[in-house]
Length: 366
Image 1 (tube, rainbow, N blue to C red):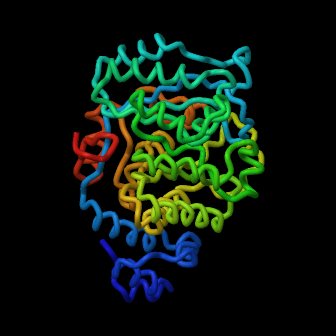
Image 2 (image 1 turned 180 degrees about the vertical axis):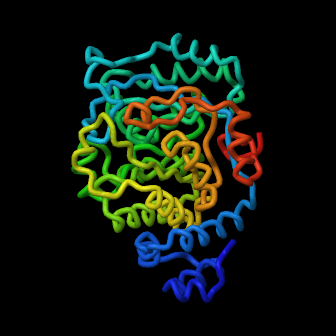
């Protein structure tokens, strides 16, 4: 329930209250004040009001599966516990097409969404991936294949010496229909130099998504928060996503990803507060700032089930899905389950007081 205007006046948030009630855009300065504000309930109630205005009690989930084809990667990202430098490194893996198809077949389920990401492998070709997509579509023709981060798309363009457009078109022709949102991390150059120095910069990441959107592909977008970034840099990140969405309208969902602190070198340099309050406020401010992105995900893999349920009262309207087996977050310390059954997801939503809606990758009822 939204507090009265007098309450927000006492909290010094009267102008933000009026902006929310009138449907006006939250400014960067207002977003910063909300992140800095000590009253989490005041911030959360505003975000929940917007969430209810957009979606009512509907809360989305999906029957999906994550496939990680390899963890061999050329990039030395300091937050990553998943990456291995070569196929000979301890813990390195690369699955063949047959092994990936077997993983799908073992589940004996029809998925609405198949999410495919991995490391930027130094030698795997575009043809290797387009062939894989065709085989997956033959096995799961009803599924939307949500494939690759912008970083992987750019990596393939460099390997093949072709344009971003050519990579995206080849994947689309093979049957892939969406991009994932990974690789955004934090857009601020200061942060990227320390956490992902060889990855795409902010402008390049945004360009890949802009091109994808111009070709009719939808995508997610993300923000990795809770490490060495400032709250001002979080607000800047959200503003840059909002600016691109104003132009392309191609982002379907925003996923705030709390940094996982185990098994990676960045953990020794972390400066931000790792707290429930900070995570919920960040989700709430994301809902308030990203007025042009319909859906905010409470990613239960990285939040855990209980915090994901709480996030539904702080602006989130989606909890992701069955997943089946997630590696990237868990190798960095996420202590959630690797998978949830479809009935567990429904119960998780109804137990929180919301209405479960099984969706496809495009947020249409499935």
